[in-house]
Length: 329
Image (cartoon, rainbow, N blue to C red; front, side, top):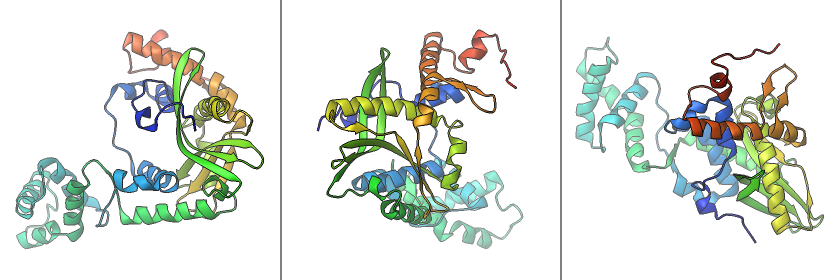
C-alpha cells in the first residue's frame, strides 16, 4: 500500500490544513497564540475516533481517571493545587490546600477547621490529584465519559447505516487514519482522513470523516458553516482523489461523507453526503442568509498575507479596509 506521507510525520509536516484555514476564517489571532487545552467535547470526540479507528493507541494517548468529576469550590481548589504542587504527597497536599482555601476565600462562611479538613479529604479530590500527576501528558478521561464513548462506538459499529464504515467484511477493506500530503494550485496541503471505505466487490472508493456531538445527529447541517466543514469536505475530497489515483486507479470515486454520531442519542447516527459543499468550500460564496464566506483558496492567500505582514489581531479584510467591515442584508 502506497501512503503519501508516514503517519508519524504528519503532525509536524509543513503544509496547509483544514484546522489552520478554519482559524484564519474565524480568528487569525489564534494562530499566533499557544494552543489551548482541548475541551471535554473535543476529548470525547478524539476518544471515539481512537476507539473506532486505532484502539491500540488508547493506552498511549488517554488516561482513564478513577474518581468522579469535581464541582464548584472543590474543582477550584483542585485547579489551584495542580499549579502549586510539583508532585503529590498527602502531607504537602493538606498543607497547601489550607493555604489555597485561605487565599481564594473558598468556603468563607465555614470556620470549623475539622469541617474544612473533611472538604480537603474529599476522596474524589484526592483521586483526581493523584490521577493528574500519574497521567502526565495523556488526555484525561472520566469514567462517565468513557462509558458514553464506548456506547456510541458500539452503535456506530453495529447500526445498519454506519457499520459498513467501521466493520469490514469479505468484500470490503477499511483504511483508518490516512495521512495525505498533496499539491493544489501550487500550494502544499495536508489532510488526515478518518477513513476510506474500499468496496472490493463493486470497486468503489469512499472517503469519510467522523463527527460526534452532544446534539442530535440531525443538527449537523446547522453547524457546517459555523465550523467550516465545507472547507474540510472540499480539501479532503481533493486529497482523497489524489490518493485514489495513486493507489486505486481502477476504482470509482464516491462522494466524501460525514458519519455523524450523537452522545445524547447514540442509537440514531446519520450519514451526510458532502457533494453540495465542495464548490463553496473551495471558492466561497453567499449563503441563504446573506452571509458571504470565503473558500479555502482565498483563505490560503489570507494566511500567507498574515505571515508576510505579521498582523494577526483582525482579518485581512479589516486591515486592508482600515477597520471597515461591509455588512450584508
